[in-house]
Image 1: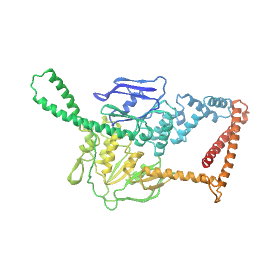
Image 2: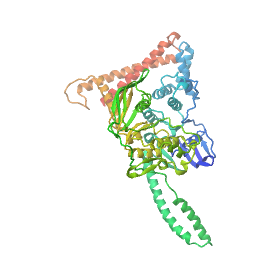
Image 3: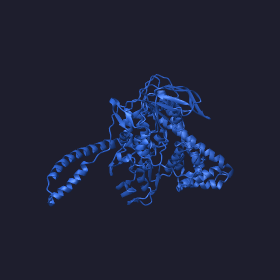
Length: 625
């Protein structure tokens, strides 16, 4: 079933075309990632599809009656409302019923209002919706719904907009960089949510693991053309390489033909026949194809930076707190030359604060930060740089440096560095105010790298960068010989770049993990599994008796578990009956007004006991298999 069609859409800014005559469709249950370089109009295309931006020509056709929700990079929230008021602003009718029920719970003395709300929840089967909505808020760390929007951070506002988008269960969800401002735990939850939910997605994201695990189709805009790949990110990489190889071969043949036709053109007299004119037209077409250049770079740099001495950076018993929030507690670490450290942890555990203490921009409460005499720190911050009005791209970078020295007396000029980060010569003389958000991030990266630091700190460098730029940055960093510290939620990037991790657990606890992010997840998953297995074993009465075992259980163990299994089935049946009887009394208005509160609490207790018994029933049944 087709939800939406983009037909010959063209968009320009001034005289510059962003994209021309784009056409594609979005069908039910597709999970599509849209990939393109920064500055090629990804966000503009999303805005056009969502009806937030006009187009020059073409049209967007939407199926009648479908609910489309757009999660833009910039949130549009009323700063005066609370989180709860913002959520319930939605037109979703089920959400209105849940809101009515939530208010009725706060005013239990009004028995009629409570009964009406309860009946509506039953009638519209809204209980699952309520459970789902509360789970979404919990996973995205919204526990206090009375907070006013104006007091939230930018990251919290982005997460709230995401939560509202998910709560409203749209038919088609359009997402622009949904993983920005989410910590790793939230990203992994969102992955699993999208995998299990029957929801149609069209998204722009640079998170390659997210692409790998969520999307079933990749759509690439490359040099003005749309290419579709029915598969995940790995499939896309494989098929894209095949396509580029074919293009390379075709281009080689075209160049040979061009040389041949050029020789023929030079021999032709001024008077042309109809046949020769046709060949001349063909020649110009061949010439255009032969002149094509791809702007992809494979970097192999031998950077000649100032050599680090024996002392790099030393942290001696450093502690830092903000009121009751403990960031570090007597943390010690001595950095060795050439270390590549990734920093991970939930939002609010102090990762950026740690970097600011490391660079001595923020004082520690106690302890000492010692930086070696030969250390030259380069610090890429999330906030970016302040650019003077009227500056051109090349002028901005030259304020920070003219070149990076390479081995054997060679140099990488500021202009060449910009080219490697996909600012062609023409783009280098554009005014900075013309750049997209992603292009500004690229420029900021270049201003940090041109200073040739030997201790490089990158705080969320992958935010707003396209996948092509990420590949370039990764190649640069793989060649980088100095010390490297990276804070990032991009797991693919971390796996490729760092050797070990600082894991910020919160409450001042920082663990040094020897491996990359995938190693860490495998370790954590293994630890969780072992912990779960231990908990299951603890609940079983261990009867030590050396007898022949069936499926790993002794005869007495199996006998005891069978007995427990029977007891659980009986208790579940009894609790279910009591729950249904009480729900029936609520539905038939058979409960006295003065007993509604106690009866409601009793019902919740039945539900809680049922969940506990059913979980244990499942554990026992698995042990008996």
